[in-house]
Image (cartoon, rainbow over all chains, first blue to last red; front, top):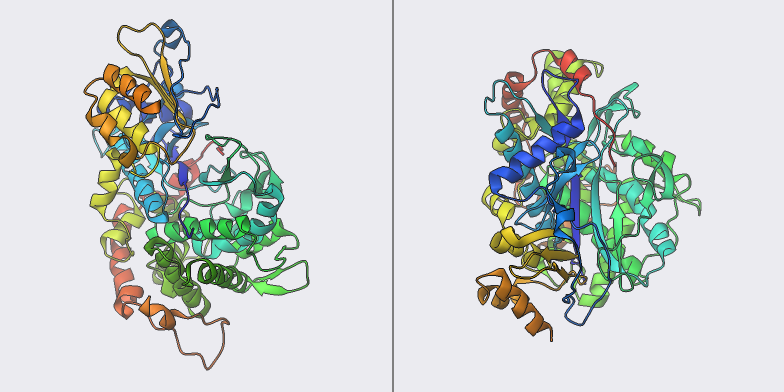
Length: 509
Length: 65
């Protein structure tokens, strides 16, 4: 199994109107989505997202032809920009969530692909901002890949992992909570300010930790839980669970991003196969989560229920070694049998080792280290205390998605960040879906038959077919069906949507 | 992978006898020098908002998920 599983990352970007603090962020977010959609010729109205998660039919092929009745008059243009909601040709969803523009990357199967399509999301936002800012000297909108304003508001970067439904949720809670308390030492994006409203000056490892107030729960916008219980599989519910992870930060460093999802996917495999070593339950996980985030020296001790006191790194080594033993047992190699798993296991050990000797040596790989190192250099040069507003400004501008304004982009351009994905690969992923999931089918439908796609969702595409009074809904309840290998022939034989539907019926028989 | 042994973990920080771990692809690739940072600081000065205090104060977001 290794690191591979169906997964994806969704990010709500921070949004501001320079010079107009009173601008309505919902309206502004709608402008971002509609400007991009119009420029790309994508539908934003007509209920372009299919919210009806209905008819959980499935067949051995995974998608199946259904005939949902809907009156096209009910699907007239929605011109309210705050409802803007589009599916991109790369299979992603781009829409307004609460008061933020959100990019939900397409389903992928490897950590490297997560990074690739996450970077594509940054480019989508960059392009949307460019369209809205014809004069860069007088910008009307700015977007930020961060997760807090430092004044008490937080917005999310969520990871999604497809799991076997048969795994008891309690096993997930027990196995994953200690990992999430510790994971932030390599996954955190770094933050100036401690406490939800930054009432204490200083630096911490993560944007999000202070906003987590409980251990397990359904909420995502208040009383945020370390383990979120949302159960919305977007797939065959009797087979799968989509684990919705809300505790992570938005990463810009490729290595941190890769490790965040890669190690989490591995730990989930251990949980599914009951290969975790003993009980790692943390006493008081919420307050410990905060304490670990507040300590860039990484010396904070985590107290386990059995009395052990471990640093986050020591706890992560236990997880790492359990993964290595699991991979050795299952695949004959402690780093795994495929190159994606080997990349994650090798980098994981490397980063944990260097964090244990000199955390600053990870400045090329980890967001919080890169950010802290820069902030420290800035403080040293100008003799600044942590209360200095320039440091908070630098933290915000770190995540500005405009290359000319982004502090992180300056670091990357200076060659001081390890890139796993080239700019060209990220750019290609803006328009191209991943080949090995149903995102291929979804994205290609938008590329080839956009005029006839009435709406789409994670698990369906709805077509309006010339000459037919009813809409045609194609369910896609199996995330690994609809890959390029499986459907490319059908696309190649279908110059128009009428042929496509006929071909799908025939191949479904 | 042949490079496995070299990245074998050093489990405890603060072990005085422990040598730093071998960098996987040479020091220049894994370390960022102070001179490198200083040159970026100058660039940051150019892009950082002129009125940092006002910029930080006006960066107010609605909560999300």
